[in-house]
Length: 72
Image 1 (cartoon, rainbow, N blue to C red):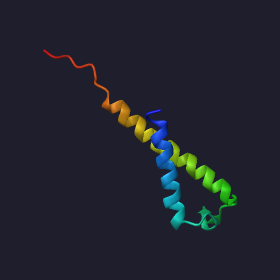
Image 2: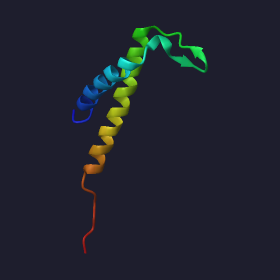
Image 3: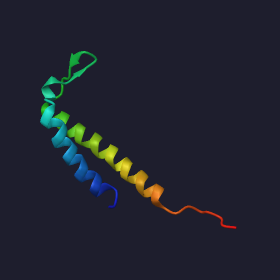
Image 4: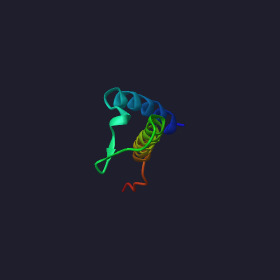
């Protein structure tokens, strides 16, 4: 829960910030309009944001763990 819950919250914030400035109807892929509904764009974007922020949080948790260091 240390990883997925903060990532979920930040994904929600990112979703609001991005789509405050970007209209899903104006998105294009390879010069062609994206043929997805607005709800599909919102949903896929949320899960992409959630995955990216979860990966970032997981990496932070991983790197904060003490390593096996030999002290002489």
